[in-house]
Image 1 (cartoon, rainbow, N blue to C red):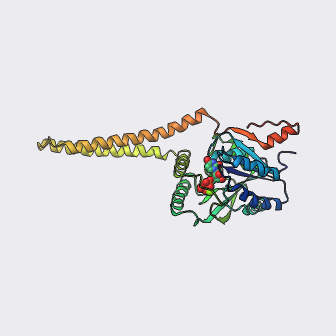
Image 2: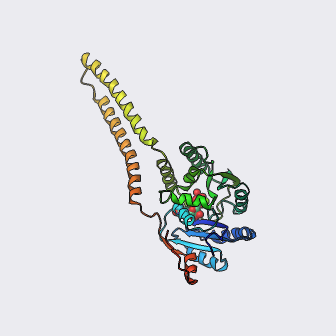
Length: 326
Ligand code: UDP
Ligand code: MG
């Protein structure tokens, strides 16, 4: 079997999703079977600590196209997605969350669009987020506005990680120096011909969100610092403002000195010290954010470790020992 004999790979990152997995298979499988083309589903188990691993093995027994890639520990949504993407073998690669918030029925539509219009990227775009709560909608809106400013207008608003990529796009992503790129930024940045398929986002089918506020904030900070040095410029502007303020205060001091009221200066001194201290800390923090990124990039540590891949195991069984590493 040649590597491109599969026309479609569907990558599903999974972290503690034992409750939704059977529902996912129930909806995804008929859709893919109906295509009547060779496909694989790459389920990336992102170090789940619940019964997901066992449930997956049970499901794969009944569904030969289900391939299980297990990561050794929880590495995060983006890393799990990259792991699945870089191991997939299909001519086209779709990615979809496990929780059925994105409709699997749209995948054939994406594939059709990509083929007829010869597109490399098809985004799934949410037209209606009324099932997300107001806070999620508001933070998501702010996030997309921000990244459209950073990356450019070809970032579709409200396109999450439900999308279809061509093999050449996946290979281009693999060429990037980032080990685990923020995919929803890097895909538009690559800027290959793209189209959209719209859908309404549903409620999570079962289980709890795996994206608490902390992870959302981390994604946002990562998105900004990986695309822009503008926050560092903030430090420069604060410095310029501080110098201006100091000049003003100097004039004031002279006036006060010359008019002989030098003693009552405590509050202004106190405020100035606090202000300058705060600005310095802020700028140090900003610098630290980028130094940290440089440090991580230099370390070049793998963002995830593969524990097992059922496709590699199957190949070994056939006597075809394939190189399982990247
Ligand atoms: N996920 C993952 N690793 C993590 C967190 C989440 O692989 O550390 C997966 C999760 O199983 C789901 C997808 O990423 O398939 C999106 O997570 P979730 O639906 O919880 O995010 P939300 O839709 O609430 O933003
Ligand atoms: Mg979800």
